[in-house]
Length: 300
Image (tube, rainbow, N blue to C red; front, side, top):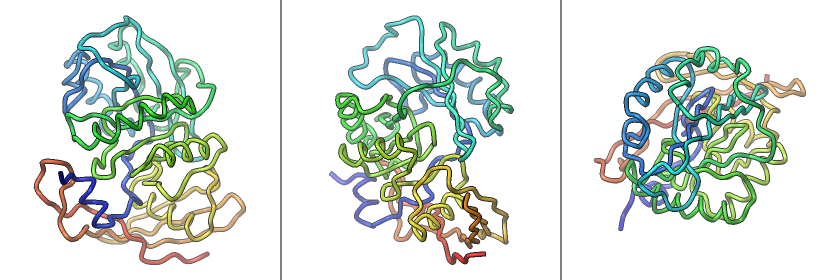
């Protein structure tokens, strides 16, 4: 059976600069089944789902649903649910969490402030190891269920980290995909062994470049530039690099990547199209998804 993930792998499509962009993630626990558009297709009140999505628009906050790995009965077994808010801009990352009985109260959050990294005292600081969020929503793409759910179950059974299933991380064709907090790096084409390596690296304050799609705290040109500099230097510490980018014409960006030791690089990033056409998701027509290519890197 051909899937979007097998097609992408066979075409050697690069993982770099394909992470979903979100300065801040709002993750709301919702058990039971998820529809393709989970915010309005689950046991969460669809009006609340639409309202949360609208409240996040343009703020840098991305909302998704989470649940524990395992079987999911068609019911909500508990009255309380976990809520996690995580800011993922390198050097300023944090994770806060609480539990709520009525998620409608989340609409009172200052989403603009959350997007800039101001948590406003929300919940309490997360203590402990990394949070692993594995995309498993088979209603959105079958690869996420076929490949993501076994990975989430394996990681949970191994007990190496706090593991959640999540509704959508983008890039189904890179399944199984995983977002790791607190630093917000997304990874793709994982195995149980490589995912455990990623979590061990994260716990030590490093990222794992081999499977990295990018840091969600940067947009896609920035992700491409950061990963290119990491490949050039071998630097894996999560907070070692920061960047600033500016558009330099249609489909072109100049990104300055700065190291904490004072070194700086300028990367030229060009937007292209992935050829030949391939399905971006199972069941969809072939397309040429945008890709970010680093044309040059020079040290300043």
